[in-house]
Length: 284
Length: 250
Image (cartoon, rainbow over all chains, first blue to last red; front, side):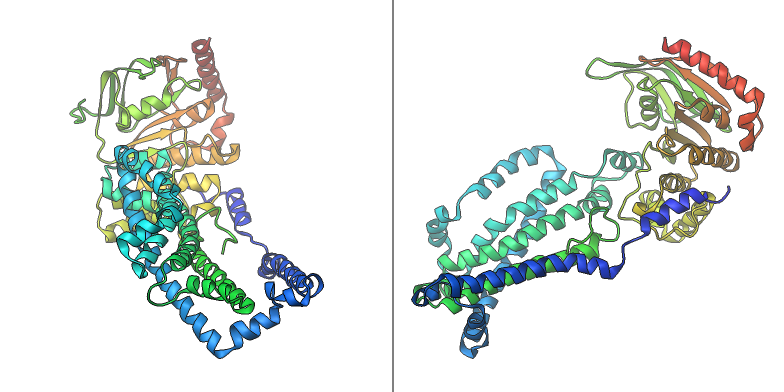
């Protein structure tokens, strides 16, 4: 057999050519930096230009938020402890959601009958407003960490199930035919075809759920404050005391936690599927 | 359905008919045999049931009438798409079928090397499918089946999506592999010159319901050189197949 034609090789290297790294970074980071600077400017304008001095507690200037909220030793220790408590709840909740979500999605992918049986209840669970079941959760699980984790799971479970199931069902028919032709059993098909094919969708779900698990942990903490105080309790306390700086610091910390979790899963996603997945570029 | 062959034929269709649940009659009275050393191509208009026949041969579909005799243990099957797993590199894709058949890793490695060499993809072993051209994907798909050293190769319009030059090159390479590896080949296409260039025999299928309406023995010796396409006898045979195809279509 002769060599691969020049044509074939050319088109292959053309696909491999990427824009330069520097340009990529500038294109990725410059727009959010510009927008961020604009937001800070607007913030100062509102604090000093719009709000009268006695109403400035509503939006403290950013340097004073940093001073009081982050640089003050006592406040910082208190906030970081609260952040850690909420992170713990988010991680436990997310782990449970991932485990439960995977098992349910795999079961549903193996039999249409199970999908039909389970799916409507998952949609129902997703549709329940958390506020409506807060009394029930405290009735069953108390007002401590368990209840906070339950809220976290209820909020973060659905995207994992939906995305994992969608991913498991996404392998093309031709690929399934290939496995059928070569007598692959159910487990081999799941391991070598369906699961790897599902990875991009699974990670999309994980990133959504990771963000939701942080929201779940904070919402849970807001309602169920027994034991170690989390960010939710801090928010409540500072809002009641009109501590503008501390309140904003807690808001920044909680959104930073969400962003970090989202980013971590983006990095893992890039490591896991970035090399082969066509659509997986500039996502982290 | 009998899947044990006790004759010299690699594949034998006996009065195959196929009516789909929606009432569409795809195939009617298809009977022919394919032996080792034969490369038979079926040409026919789009939608005439060619691919359905191949799916019946492979066991992906059960015919509603007739029977097929074939040994499916190590079947080579090349799909319309390359059906490469995007998360596997070229060499891991080529290794897949050997893996599914439980061949031990040491032997697998050697089979993969040999197959990649046969289709001339050396140097691309660690590339992912997304960085391959259409022609290279098809080569990778061919190599994947070659690891099983299949006695029977089924080709379901594999080169329909590549450009003309690449297609001709793949045709030349396929007939060379056929000669070298000695498998029996059943090839589906709607390109007449592709059919005549590669095959020992061309069968013409009518529009739906698909029936075999004509057959042509192709006398040229292997390996066939690219300039065979400019030979007068080649052109005449292509013309005859074309007339038969038009006749079946009207």
